[in-house]
Length: 458
Picture (cartoon, helix red, strand yellow):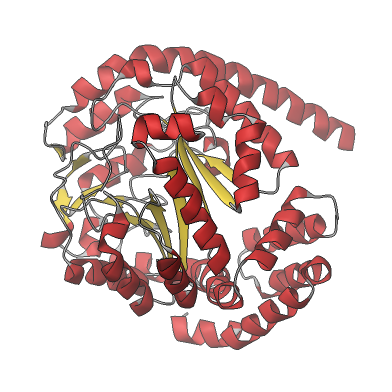
């Protein structure tokens, strides 16, 4: 179904009215909007989500309902309207059909999102940065950024994740792209140090930009890795975004040094109090600058974080995702173009932000041709890389797979140091084995609990 026809059927104007309706009394009207969304939804999965949301929103004590009320009260009306249309309509209801059209037309798998770096430059120098071994002097030219986004929207991709480098060193270009591609969402990973009150107000006026601000813990942990004074700058950036009514959350990497801090209730409560609506947790992966296996969180610390996030999801009014421990929800690895992929500032088309190997450069090819990358096809051929979705990653959980795929597709290293897949992957086998034993035990416990619950229902 052509996009414009589908859009007219769903009705952007009707959705905007629905969002205004819900803002008038979110505590009462959330349930009604969820039911309405269920009637509009075309995909069975989306209908199921709507039913679940309606049930949650009907419970005054539900933390997810409280998060939704908080968001509606905290965000500016313009942000609620534009982000609601872009997320619910463009990237949600309409995107699956448009991506399917693109897949049938071009013979490729079309992912839901694209992660792209406008620049390799950064105003900080953080220990263990995943991007530190890229050429940090590089900017992607504006014309290429614009072209990639236009080609993506043409095949049904309306969600762009922006990283770097520090994306906001190209603030004007970033705002220009968001303004031009105003039917898509821009989710920006930033260190937050350049987000002033004036810039936050500009983001609010656009309405289609959200932010994940990087932290390592409290002031001591953040300044130790990112530089003295950075924590306070981040706190101010969060205040600026909250005051302007812009959606934001945190991004944090847990390591051997800070896992217990980031996994504490004291930490997550601070993030909630600052106005964070979401949070992304990454476990440290030894790629990029000063790669160090001893800096990785131990398998036991990873298990601790898994349990903390599960607890928070039943208690706290914030959406928190752990990109490694949440493989159960995504049915394994989402990279390699399955759900997303990465384009670095030099134009190299990579499977993942942490997998610095490529066969193609976007400056020399179209987006559709880039999706035919031999490395992407090899990823999709073998996903999931483990039958236990708690072991999703081909780097740290199944390192033999990444080495094999890179070798078979003759992908080149995109790092300045030219590290080979063997050099990256072979030292990780011990970690993968230990985590695998823990994850298999947790899976067995979860499977037993699920089976007992189903028996009780029957």
